Amino acid sequence: MKIVVIGSGGREHAICFQLARQLEKTNPTINLKLVESNKARAEFVADQLDRTVVLSGDALDAEILKEANIGAAETVVAVTDQDEVNILASVLAKRHGCARAVTLINATTFAPLISPLGIDAAVSPREITVSRILEHVRRGRVRSVYTLRAGEAEVIEVEALETSPIVGVPLRDARLPSGVLVGAVVRGDEVIMPRGATAIEAQDRVVIFAAHGAVKKVEKLFSVALGFF
Image 1 (cartoon, helix red, strand yellow):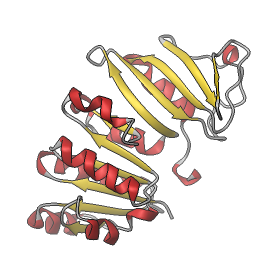
Image 2 (cartoon, helix red, strand yellow):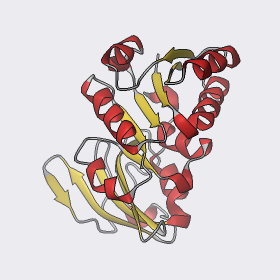
Image 3 (cartoon, rainbow, N blue to C red):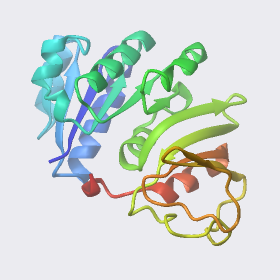
């Protein structure tokens, strides 16, 4: 069973609550854990949710992470109002064995740290909605996301999985949306500069440049069902 751990705290607790409720509704096989730093809020949320295990404590506490079974989790979502906490919680979760980390960052100065620290995706305040975070949880294995020119474009590094619609299709036939450019394909130790005849294979790492309006369409090309993991 897939485990998703959500780190909550501060002003963003409402988003975390709505995210957990939406995942409960749409994905009944997911084992959900929500770590809430405020005890009173944790008790309230626990009463409102049906299947989510709500833990009262600090997402940076190793014992809390252990109680959340973070080592078996497929995804951790760190959405507090403190960038440092989100980044550190994501790094700790990955070091304990969590497969993927989605992190909220408010300050653009932290953006260069995301990829080197092994964090898979960053969400900025302009896009902090339940639906936007769900996209990061549901889609293929996103390794990093960088926002360019105040949100006008994004650079996305994603691992192609065998069920992704774009796999096995020559790029000239892939019908990529307008405003999208495949910049590179990394296959093992080989970096491939893509041409029209290039076909993306499963486990390839693909670097894509996408205008803001085309990002969601790009995500669909690499999306997989939650049950795949």
